[in-house]
Amino acid sequence: MDDPALTETVAAEDGEKSTPGELATDREWLRRLIAEGSYHYVYTNYDSEHPDHWHRYLWPAVLNDLRQYLNGSQILDAGCGNGAFCRELIKLPRVEISGVDLSQTGIEIARKTCPEATFKIASITDDIESIFGHTFDAIVCLEVIAYMYDPRGFLEALRDGLRPGGTLIISTAFHGYWKNLALALVGKWDQHLATTIDGGPIKFWSRSALSRLLGETGFDVKHFIGCGRVPLLWKSMVITAVRR
Image 1 (cartoon, rainbow, N blue to C red):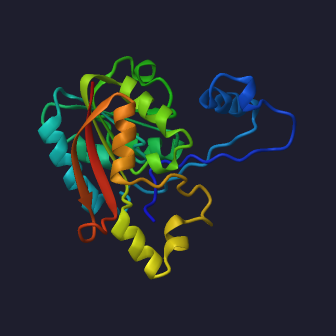
Image 2 (image 1 turned 60 degrees about the vertical axis):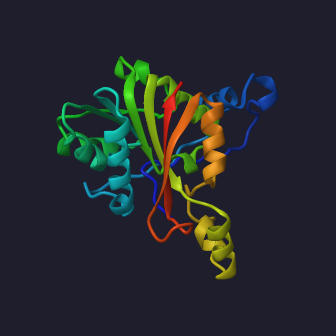
C-alpha cells in the first residue's frame, strides 16, 4: 500500500464529550472533539529528504498536467511532507512554490532542502488563504485523500484555496473492477487494505467515485491517467480538475 505524505487518523477517548447531534455538521463535531482532546492526529515523521517510493511513476504525470493546465505561477503542494516534490516543482519556469503539512519534521527538512519555497505547518483542511495570505493558481495533492475522515470537506478546502479557474491535481491509490477482482483472486485484500497499520488509509477510491465527488464540490474534471503497473491494474491514479 502506498505510504502517505500525511496521514490523518482519529482515536476516541473515554469521557462525556460532544455528539454529532449537538453540532451542525460532522466536520464541526470533529473540530470540537479535537479541541476537547478526544481525538488525536497521527502523521508521518521524516528523518530524510528522500521522496516516497511512488515518486517514480506519479511525478512525471503530475508535472505533465501542470505544464498543460497551469494558468498562473503560484503552486501549493498540499500534504508536502518533507518537500521532495516541491524541489521538483521549483524547477518549473517562473513559479512560486509553497507547501503545507502537519509534520514538523517534514517541514523542517523541506525548509532546509528547498529554501526557495514557502512552507507552513498546518492542516490541509484549514483556511489555505488565511495560512498563506492568498489563493493559488494550482494545488497539487498526492496520495492524501485516502487518509481523510471528511473527504468532501477536504476537497472544499482545496477548492477555496484555488482562484476561480485554478487547477487541482490529485492522486490516490487506484481501485477498479479488474484490480479489485485480481486482489480477491490472489487473496491479497487484507494486505492491500492495510487494516493493521496505524494511521492506514480509510477511503478507497475508484475513478468514478472521486470524479463524482470532485464535481459535487465545485470542480470540472479535465484529465485522468493511471500510473504504475499495467493498465487497469494501476497502482495510483491522477485526476486533474479545474475550479468552476
